[in-house]
Amino acid sequence: MHGQMPQEIEVWYIIPAIRRELAKSMIKDLKITQKQVASIMEITEAAVSQYLHSKRAKEVVFTKAVLEEIKKSAKEIAKNERLLIQEMMRLTNLTGVKHVMCDMHKKHDAKLPTNCDICFEGDLINIK
Image 1: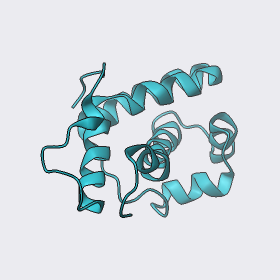
Image 2: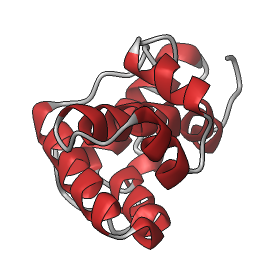
Image 3: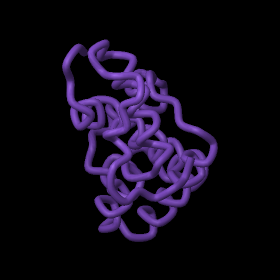
Image 4: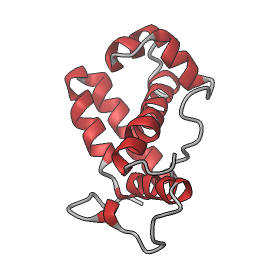
């Protein structure tokens, strides 16, 4: 992953991990079927199954606080599917999510300075 941008890490790792946790929450907490989750999240049933069996996005681990925010989003999305994009945007901007993305970026790009804080510039929601 040498030389990848934080946005690439977000697309390849962070967003799938958020989708994984949303799917898990909708199925386990809200008792929504895999088929319904696939429809709500606009992904295939196979993708939902892979998320549930940790075959996708398994490298990313979120804090309990971030997982609680994802559960809140799952409830909102389940009530109104049109909130999917809004909630995904909110979740990707959580400070705790940015920390995971930053840590992955540092781990995979030896050229980054140890004090890099590019991911934290601008307005972020402070959930660690």
